[in-house]
Structures are given as structure tokens and as C-alpha cells.
Picture 1 (cartoon, rainbow, N blue to C red):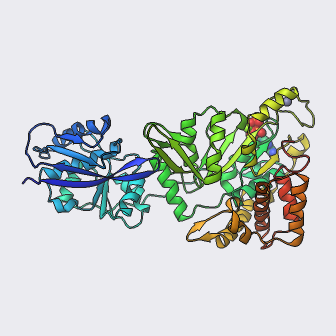
Picture 2 (picture 1 turned 45 degrees about the vertical axis):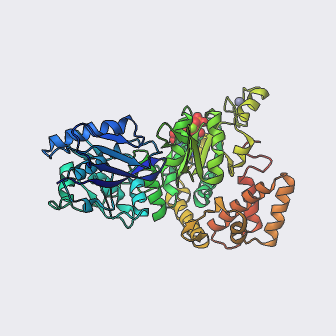
Picture 3 (picture 1 turned 180 degrees about the vertical axis):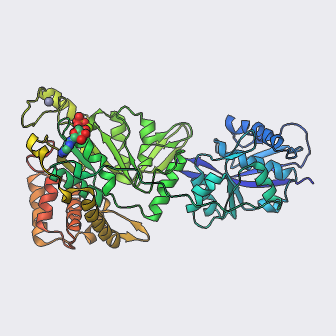
Length: 509
Ligand SMILES: Nc1ncnc2c1ncn2[C@@H]1O[C@H](COP(=O)(O)OP(=O)(O)OP(=O)(O)O)[C@@H](O)[C@H]1O
Ligand SMILES: [Mg+2]
Ligand SMILES: [Zn+2]
């Protein structure tokens, strides 16, 4: 039986999204040689034909003779990635008459095919499944592992096939495929307890505020004062991911070829020597970078001034819009990047400026040059700027304070987060306090008269712009939420100004 033309759906993964692609194979003018692959396929996809052919032989499937042409549409997009192996194999099998053509109607397929005919996971399966669901696909066929991974995508029947033979025989109606087993929840990674760290009331308060309201945070302090130790403990107090957020995190990780790290919000901590492409995303096939892997989670930049200047400047877009746009030769790709930025730095190159015991050895010029690595607009977006001082021997000997431990802080953070969820979720989209703007900010920030007077006073004293005012109000809103109050009062505003580093003894004063 020869079938003129058969079509199998697939997706081209760009960034974290997939563009639907139709793989069409035809045997209309029976030929004997290698079929022509049309539609701007790159070397990897061209090799796929030979890989797939070996899989037919290895599995004793009848080889797809007589197929003259395979077309990948739309033609103007360059097709890359190993996920096209499976739709190509199925289109060849269908055109060679191995299953009735109507069986592949509305079918999407995605996966790499090995020489032995196994179907393997491919990068970006979740994105393809979402594209399939949005385009009204009837089903998606992929590796068993990818089928389990994609089970979170609503409204799309998924079938995992271990081998190309399983897939072809299923389409021929001669074999059943089992629905994917649910993925066992990943065990949470162990996060050390904040109670391990003595003292540091204000830095711990700042951590709770950052976690509760999604306010970007900078810790400034001498070497060994506990900045990194504090920030590493942040995941323990973060609110859990909502279902939509979980799916978005899963999609971003799958598009980078990573599995989801656990049930917690992700924390990404790229090294300060990281390239722009690894932090922001990019490469020939536009993979998500650290800012996208930190979507709905935390981006932790330790030793902030040591990062490349172009990387730091490029963070302004995601901090403002929650997205990152990466340019390529003829095309730009936009990826989600709504992260909480937390960072640590020393106050000066030697690290001891403002220290209670040790003198600073830096010249004023050296201090200025160090600070200048961080531009004003970036510092402006770090809502919380808090000093982490060196502790004395006596302070370090203090007994553990359970009230400042992870469990206690987490409880308050969750309650404050729940208040925001109730107040600031519209059409299923939630905006944390740290991202409130315009009308939503006005609606959320009911202030007492004294609070408004306090805001005016801080604005005047610290010569703040309208943007500074917005940032102050957002912070004060979170402080009131942590205290379970509907109205922002003047004490919230004062504390917000202090945590913002507006006070005369601010962290970077
Ligand atoms: N408040 C504290 N209580 C108990 N131990 C602490 C405290 N602060 C820091 N430590 C311990 O000191 C060690 C050094 O702290 P950490 O690495 O966080 O310093 P840092 O401020 O990041 O220094 P650097 O500027 O050199 O990066 C940590 O392993 C931590 O266990
Ligand atoms: Mg450190
Ligand atoms: Zn110094």
C-alpha cells in the first residue's frame, strides 16, 4: 500500500516556546533513492534520515521505500534539534504505508530516535506539548520519559513509546501504549536552617520581606559575615509554586534540557565569570539562560560587582518586564524571566570599610571604582539594601533563636503571601507586591494619613524620584502584610526606608 502524502505535527523549540511544524512525506512519484528533505533543515535534521533508516533495519520494520520528498513547513524557519527524528520516522513509515493515513491526523510527535530504534527524550518536550495542545492536536507521541514530564499539560492525550516499532504498531492499531506513569515528586533538596546563623535580625527580616513580597535584595558586608550563608537559606522560606507557575518552571527547565529540580522554587546561582549567553540565554538554537531558569524563583548573584558589566546591564530588562529578549542574526526570541534577584557584595575591594575592628585599606578612588561597576539604575532596582555586619565573638556565642529560624519565618512569609494572592490575583494572574504598578499599586496600598505623610517626608529627605516612591510603597505594603494588616502605617514606611538603604547609615552609604 502506498500513501501519497502523510503529515505529522512537531514543534521547533525557540527559547522556551515551540512553533508548530508540519512534517509531510510523499511517495507520489515512487523513487528508490534517498528522499529529498525540504524546508530549511539544518545538518542535524538532515542526518536524522540516516539515523532513522538504521532504526527501521534494527527493528525489522519494512524500510520506507519509495518516499521521494519530506517537507518541513513553514519553510522559512530553520529546523534544528533531535526532536524531529520521531515525526520524520513516522512520516516516512506512513508514506510507505505502514499505517493508515488517518491515524496520524492531529498527531504530534517529538523525540530522538537511536540507531537501535529506541525513542529518547529531546530538549523542549514540554514546549512542544503546549504548542500541540494550543493547536488542537488530538495526541502527542514521544519517549516514555517525556510523556511523564509533559503530563502536566492539560487537554492533550500523551503516549510514550519506548521504540519506533511500538509507535508504528500503535498507529497500525496492532499494539497498545500505556498512559505515562505519573512522575514521582522529586525529594526536596535539603536547605540549611536560618537558626544556624546567630544574630543578624535585620538581614533575616530582609530575607523574609524579599521572600514574602518578591523584593530584590542586596546584602553588603565584610568577608565572612554570613552574606552567602544567609542567601543560601532563602529557598527554605519561599512560598510554594502555584500550578501555573510550576508548569512554567517545568517548561523552562525542559527547554534547557534539565529536569525540574524539585517542588521548591528554583534558585540559580551562576558564577561571576559566567558568559552573557549562559546568564541571559542565547546560542545558535537560543537556549534559556540562568535568568529564565530562575523564572518564578531566585537569581542569586554572589560577589555582584565581579559580574561582567554587560551581563549586569542586561538584567535591567528582566527586572522591569519579567522577560528577556535575546537577539540572533535575523531574529529575536523573548523568554520569561520573572525572578527575585538577590545579591551579595563587599563594601569595598578589601572588604572592611565600615568594619568595627579592622581598618579599610582602600583608597577613596578604589572604593569609587568598585561601586561604579554597579550602575545607578541597577542599584535602584535592588529594593532592599541591607548591611550584614561582622559579628563579635560574644554575638556568635549567643544561643540559637528558634523565632528567627526557617520554620518560624516561613510561616509568616506564607501568611503574607496568601494575603497578596487573595488581593492581587486577577484572571488567574498573580502580581506580588514587588511588581505592583499603577492602579493595582493604588488599590493594594491603603495607607493611613500618617503613612502618607511619612512617604512625603522620606521623598523630601532622600530626594527620591517617583520611582523611588513606588518602590517604598511596595516595600511598606509587604511589611504590613507580614504583620497581617490591611492598612500601611507610618511605622511600615519608616522601616521600608531603612531596609531600602535610604537611612543616613544605609548599606552603601
Ligand atoms: N551569624 C552567623 N552565625 C553563625 N555562623 C556564621 C554566621 N555568619 C557566618 N557564619 C559562618 O561563617 C561562614 C562564612 O560565611 P559566608 O560565607 O556566608 O560569608 P560571606 O559574608 O559570604 O563572606 P564573603 O564576603 O567572603 O563571601 C559560613 O560558613 C557560616 O557558617
Ligand atoms: Mg560570600
Ligand atoms: Zn576597603
